[in-house]
Image (cartoon, rainbow, N blue to C red; front, side, top):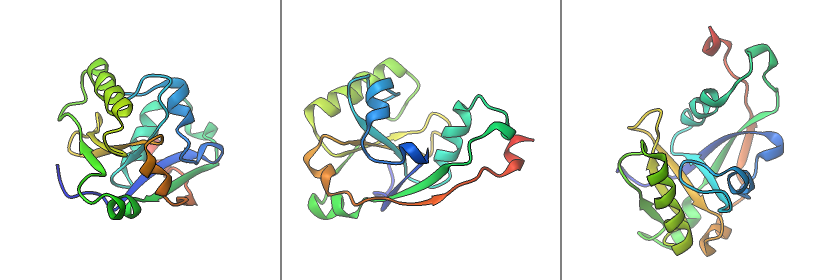
Length: 156
């Protein structure tokens, strides 16, 4: 994959705008089974918008107004473990069961604090999975966040 990202991006409702990984622990995701707390980020700011939109089942007029776009500075991980803070995952994210198995092994072995994987929506774009139980994950600073509203043109 490309150069290591300097930041990760997350779009979430304000009540869940944290790095606890509890949502993924409860529900699981493409790269983790339930029971494994992780945080899903994107390597670029626009990708989490697409990731949220694909899962929305609300009409635009019913969208909550408390979304925030978070920026997570990854430089403390790069400084703490140069060359060993980021692992590139499989090149394909199509087989959800295989992705979960790979991710669960990565989490359980605590190989790196961040796993870079392809987006299913845009395979050339990368998602970042943060293993919140990895010792180095505690070095991540509190993310910056700003209010986010969806551009109405996305719903035409």
